[in-house]
Length: 343
Image (cartoon, rainbow, N blue to C red; front, side, top):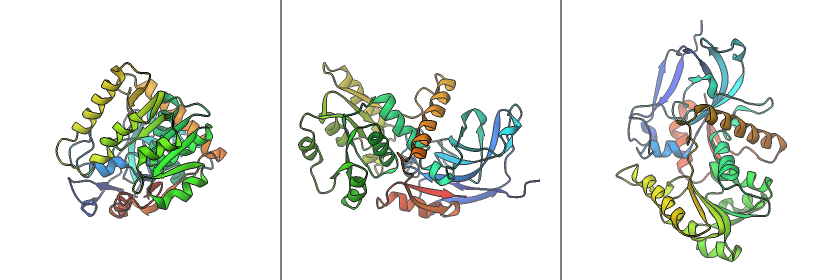
């Protein structure tokens, strides 16, 4: 009989980080087609920062357990699941529920983590790696020799994206505060200080004919400027609305406004393209295809990690019960990479 017990972090409402609650209970039993994953690492994504403010556009009603992704070991299997899956280290994209010691996941949603890859390393590359890979190779379809602009090049997604781009032979301009510039230069990225420089003017100096792709998580005025920096045939990939994180009012409006701009820009008689990237896109239409892509793309990211093309950037590692401190640190803007929680 398992006597470990369940530990999970609850977001009770719109609260400061210290308003998070720790809840204890019994480890749930898996249903048909499900497994219980004993979590070894989960993390703080930008999504949780929005969720605690009630600003993530499709978050569930309060209270709920946040946690966008996780890495752990299968500890129990339900009916219809191969018993041999027990003991396997896996990764999963869950959107919510990951900030817990044990999580029920559909077995079909699991991606095996290669031997030799640590749990915290793998965690930094689940949602961030899938997002970066799919935006680069499925949406923008970058090619060697092209030049791209990555906003937030030191962040969770940005830090993975610039490394994957460099591995693909792409030239990268990355925005970040000056404290991160040396690290970006070491990765072959041309840094731009978004606090001290006029970003559009500086990018035009570096790429007079425009860039082939822009990856913009900021939204608002930034995404308009990003569109104007594209070369003919270039692609804008918008994947967030960070500039509205602390706003009040409708949480859907920033995304709807962004979608409207994307539709308008694509209707114009020009050769540029705009996309709003959502890692969950297509799941409702074809769950099997979504799962196949997720397995394939995350496997490629893990392969890049094993080849040394990507370095897992762990900003900090804290216990699950220190989720408030971890969230506060992630929101501070002072760290590079991803803050990891380890139950």
